[in-house]
Length: 412
Ligand SMILES: [Zn+2]
Figure 1 (tube, rainbow, N blue to C red):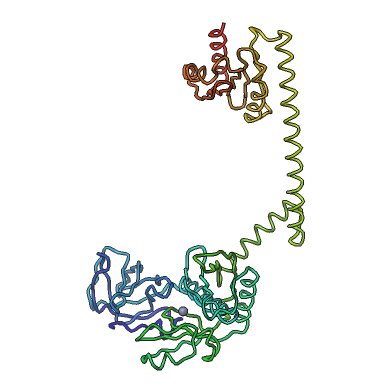
Figure 2: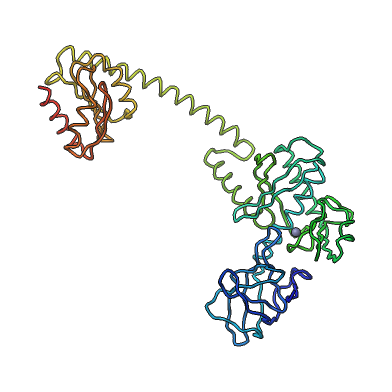
């Protein structure tokens, strides 16, 4: 190991002087190894640090990537310049980003520990994403429960926040000897064999909290500030819990409260009666929808009768009914067409003005679909249908009229 990992001794160290001891490559890009560093490489589910290095002449290079490969920490810089071994520089950590990572990562330790302590659940997967974190809790041999419900997640969330209020120290211990380390009380058997770091909460006796971890941690639980879960879903026989910790948890809470308050204003409700007011609204809407569908049925049936009477009294020019509609929807007209079809002699037209569409309706003696197929394209129309009903859609109302004119002449 060529680099002294200062982030292991002090996760709050933000700036140091360092020297490039080796120049190598990572994925085809120049990468540098420093004699000592504050930059944590990717590991333990925690993303790599960002920051910058400043040369003696004041030139600044942002950090693009920090990774660990073959036991060495490689730093890729965001520059086309290449630096030589021996170059001295000043490292500056992007502290807000690191602190955010430490809040989330330490929060995950607490939340996972509580699932272990309360339910004997084992964390089998951890994801730290841009918008949320997840843990996958498996109920294995040690499980004290046979399922995880949302109420249990809420209980774990409350108990995690109580650990935050207690301001317990995060205990980080380094071991070189596997046998010594593996005797410590911990929630998962040790799998790392050298350079072992055990992280615990509050006391070394808290086996539910202690685990091997290479990430960066806050010095006390209070600095996590807040842990908030927001979703539980089954995942491959496990329980996936979506949550946030730290500043992000607070911002998410703030954002969701904003949504809740806006919704409350719209419903003239407070948080205490928003659900009952919403339910009442849903009930009112469904009663309205039912009433609307009954009214439509009534209108369609009356329209059908009116058109039939008009056909019988010879009210339509050339005997072909043309009716125009604005308020009824295209679907309503399709229903009207279906009701009308057995009574139509030759052909009838139902025009839906808002969509410049015309429905052709017949009793089947004239094939409506064929008429649309053969003639609509003459006026740039499109559409289709079957022998008793077809629709032709045009870009302008005048095309609808010319199309109907053409069909009328065709049938004369
Ligand atoms: Zn950790």
